[in-house]
Every structure is written in C-alpha cells, then in structure tokens.
Image 1: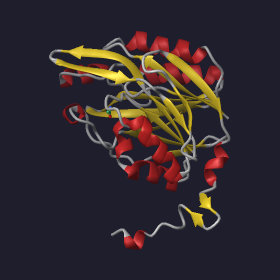
Image 2: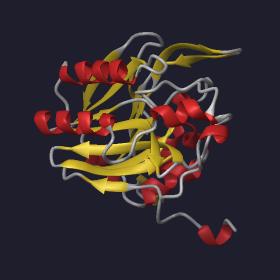
Image 3: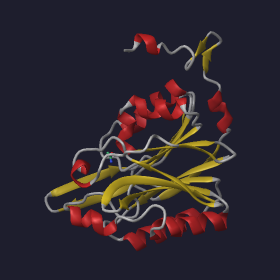
Length: 261
Ligand code: ACM
C-alpha cells in the first residue's frame, strides 16, 4: 500500500487557492492514501468566530469535501483532509475520509489546542476507524497526539494507519510519534503544514517535518521544515497487526487495565 503526506503552506482565508494547490500536489504522484494538514483549506490563526464561520463547511456536502471526493473517485485513491465543519451552526475542527466510492466519514477534534477553544466545539464523536480493504484507517487531529489515549483508542479499535492532520507549532510531536507508534505498533502519517501566519498581534510558524512513522517506532520518512511536497512510501499495513514486542509480550493482551484505575 502506498501512503503519502501532503505538506503545504496554507494561505489564510484562501480556501479555493489552498484547495486547488492540494489537488495539484495530489495529482503529481500515485498513492493509495493521501493525508493533508489540519484546516488545510482555510489556514489556522483565526481572530474571530465570524472568520471561522465564514470558512466552515458542511461535512459531507461542502465545496472542499466535494472537490476532494471527485479527485478520489477520478484517481481511485483515499484522501484524509482537515477542515472547519459547520453542523447547523456548531463549528468543529474536523477531518474527513473520502475515497473511490465517495465520502466515507469524519472525525471532530477531541482535544482542542490553545485558542481553538474560543472557535470550535470539542469533538463529540468517537475516534473513528474505517476498513478500506487494503488497511484500517484511524483519524486524529494535531494536539490529540499529546494524549496517549488517542492513538491507543484508535489502535485498540483496530487501526493500522493513523491519519494525523496537523498544524504543529510546538517542537515535540514528530519525536513523540515514535513512541505513540511503537507502544501501539501502528503506522502514522503526520501531515503538517509549513509557513508563517501573522494575524493582528498573533503569529505562528508551522514546523513542517511531516512524518511517516512505523510500528517499530521507525521514522520511515521525515520532510524538510519549509518545503511544500508530497512524499509517498510503500508499506505493508498488516505489520501493525502483530502486537508482539518479544515472544512473551503482546502489547495489547499484556495490558492491565485492572491496575490502572
Ligand atoms: C494543534 O493542535 N494545531 C497544535
């Protein structure tokens, strides 16, 4: 199975342009699964609720989802992408999975970061895992990484590949994903953005270094910090189904939830 991240510079408020560039980047290579950054179509650094409401879309049914679904049908591939979701006025920081048969499902970010708490409602849907035939796809978004429960929950539900849309600004996540993948023996595609956003008196530099991590905690590929690129690696997703780390230690059946209370 060929899996890829799309690392891009998302220009604030330029939904159509960001979407077109993502389409171009996806068209430039062949892969079975592409993962795009968090809020890839809108940019991240909102300074009012009105701004978020103006770019939020219905999921499914919004322009961004429809554009990527058409591309997934045409290219016969799967795409996971992050965007602001408007559900009858409730705004979520969401991601969605779409594929050759059309839209599949969505995730609403459960652990909101920093001022996101001013703009978004916390996710109210369970961590999702979808079987796409070649592998089982789990979704989480950015800051979810710092809660070990996020990847653990997805892995316990059977995910082989964690599709991790991000807009990372702290320097910890890429290295932490080594442990998240090792302790759960799963693959992860951390698709980050690059670039600088200045809005009012606030600014963020996004750290790039998108990463594909394997079930032995190996960094299969890490991107540069400041270049737009798509990178594809070939993996066997079923490797994630062997949870043994020694002949006597299965990381799931050795868990002792009775001792964790
Ligand atoms: C983040 O959750 N966007 C850091």
